[in-house]
Image (cartoon, rainbow, N blue to C red; front, side, top):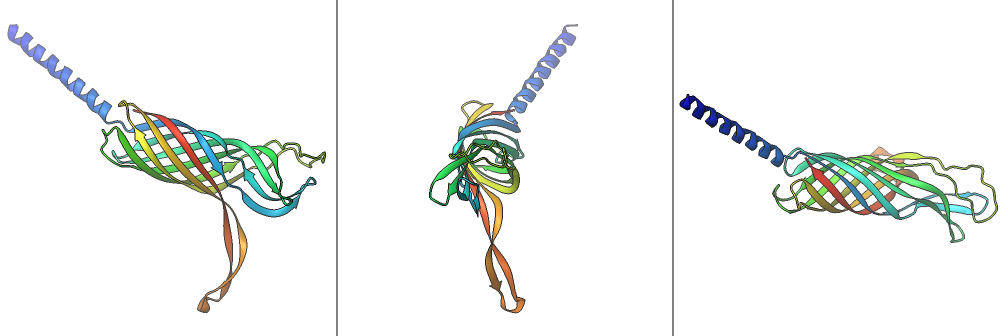
Length: 233
């Protein structure tokens, strides 16, 4: 009986070590990082065909610089490479340049980013500070918004601006800090060029191939600086 009891104790201790080892491995082998970020986004507008709205002729439309926020989820395929999804929302106003040199706010607006991203993180997995770089493909959605009353008492024919979704890429990098095993902080900068339209730019002649019309692509750019709190599990 004593021998049986001893073997039972050894088996229990062995099982305890196996469980403890499995838990430790599970804690070390964190594959998901999910975080929320807050920052400030600089936005660039695009030139348009001059359009008379009654209170002036506009020649450029600009999303105004403003605060923004978003979230991202990443799957760590390896300690240095991850695949994820990024969503971002910049709440701002849509501003217009008037041909006389003045500016006027046209409407309230949201600029949403939706991107699949690929991230490479430099250094060892247990390092407390690691730089990273990422790139992604997706879309930017310019929401419709309520039109703001013009500075002169001229009625508009609409109360909302139209919405639009266009292809965009996103590129950036930053530094990841890991003060704890499951909680981290990121400081990053992200650039998002969004395709808007192509303007005619004349003709190109290539000898044997003849001549064909060419265009000048117009992009609206966003540059975001942000801090992100994320959790690893």
